[in-house]
Amino acid sequence: MTLGGYANNIAWVDLSAGETEYKPVPEDLALKYIGGRGLGVKFVFDNGPEVDPLSPDNILCFMNGPLTGSEANMSGRMAVVTKSPLTGTVTDSHHGGWSAARLRWAGFDGLVFKGKAEKPVYAFINDGKVELLDASEVWGMGVHDTVKYFQDKYGEKDLTVIAIGPAGEKLVKFACWINEDDRASGRGGTGCVGGSKNLKAVVVKSKKKITKAENRDEWKKAHTRGLKAIMAEENITSPKKGGLSVYGTNVLMNITSSIGALPTKNSMLTSYGDDAELISGEWVKENILVNDPTCHACPVACKKEVEITEGPWKGLHMESVEYEPSWSVGANLGNNDAATVAKMIDVANDYGFDAIEIGHPIGIWMEASEKGYTKDEGTLEWGDIFGMVKAAEMVGNREGFGDIMAEGANATAEYFGHPELAMTVKGQGIPAYDPRGLQGMGIGYATSNRGACHLRAYTPAAELGVMPFNSLKVDPLEWENKGELVKVFQDVHAFSDSMDLCKFSAFAMGADEYAEQYSAMVGVPFTADDVLKVGERIYNLERHYNNLAGLGEDSDQLPKRFTEEASTMPGSLDRVCELDKMLHEYYEVRGWDHGVVPEAKLQELEII
Ligand code: SF4
Image 1 (cartoon, rainbow, N blue to C red):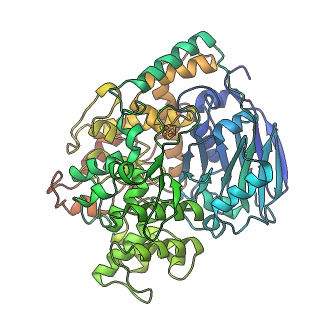
Image 2 (image 1 turned 30 degrees about the horizontal axis):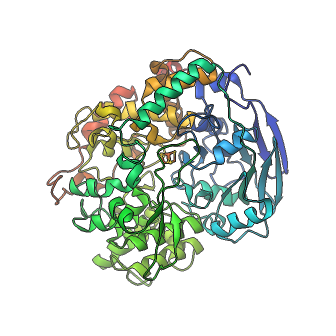
């Protein structure tokens, strides 16, 4: 391979046979799909869209990008890519920390697991080799104990542990991989796929060995320009000054609530009123914050570590009180107790399931209780802090009614005989933005290739005015041109996810900076137009996969609550989400026929 940045080595691990093949990265695929999300999606595509997600035939990819392990800012992300058991789509979910860099330093661009181990195993990655070892001692353990077990065994230094918990082992449909105790590849049920393969953990031991750029002089310039943008005081990334750095992502709680865009009580309301303050980043900083951890090569340090010193969860010390999970188990459940928010997120991390998704089945149970739809499982009231923790544990153990909730929001709502209670797209629960108050999020959720998602096209960047250097601000209640905006965001983010840069890099940098960094690292000329082109190719490949798996326009829809029940709260009063108009505009700019990628588009993008 002539390209810089890459380790030029992917481990293809056959869990059924217990064998590993080491293969170089095909250069043509690296140029077309980059790495991370893009290359992982290509591998999943080539494995066939008809595959049963929980069969040994599905593949599970842990991928990094060409900038991984270098000094590139915010480059500590790893993509976990597979076919989702929750949505039936191709899915990718990314975690931060040090695992991506360590995987590169161990000599890999990715690990691809296929088959099913006869007994529980873990993969030990060290010095260019993958060993499959007996995991029977840790099978059944929570993520925290699993991490501790491997730290005791191999020493904490230079070690990273990515693990599933009991939820993955018991095939909870939204189980996930947790890296280093608290960093989740949360969405899409990638941990459920791990459990189906009897794969408990990926343990990487490697010393720091910074990846060097192909063109060092150009790299120095590109890196400096990116760093300057991150440090600039007008950007929210600015260390210890910008909102993201000071309060973490949870700086959004008060903002979205104030504009009528915070889904509350299973989205019956669009604002949490004064209670939003009690679970906000500002409240957390003032009352329970003890540290601001970061990821590899990131000066922003948006992670927030908290300690609970009183009340029923006294003694809890954890990380990742992020905006989206804080919303899911906070405003969404009528819970204004920040300590219980932290407890619920910690339960999710220890059992190893998606802390965004868990609020959906529980919220449905609460709404069903209010409306008198419940049966033998009994009722659960809004804001019942002990009841919600118990419910989350029941999901992780698949115990009692937890066995139904573990199948996801749609199954839970159907159990009550009221499918309209599920706030999902393609079977995945919405995150923390109400599309009646942020119209762009509506079209973003509906057309996301992995089910409802805020990260495919993060329109609040423009709708709330936090684009780099305030370069773009649009009206959150306006629907016109949102289809086009979403397409551009989806394409740029598909590229940055394939480099695997943190999504928050987009609060400081854009396609120009991404192109410069890629070009200098890999050693090929590249422009902002190329960024958009490659991103568009990846987005269309995902859509083509979903089309072949049977998903079309019918799946690009929102729950009727957002399109038919008008907001009753200030900021978005009387608004519904104007999805149909935006969808029409979106398909036009994409060149899709009712949600399906035509053959001519596939050819134009060199997908076929
Ligand atoms: S901005 Fe936050 S999540 Fe992103 S790399 Fe930095 S610390 Fe990690």
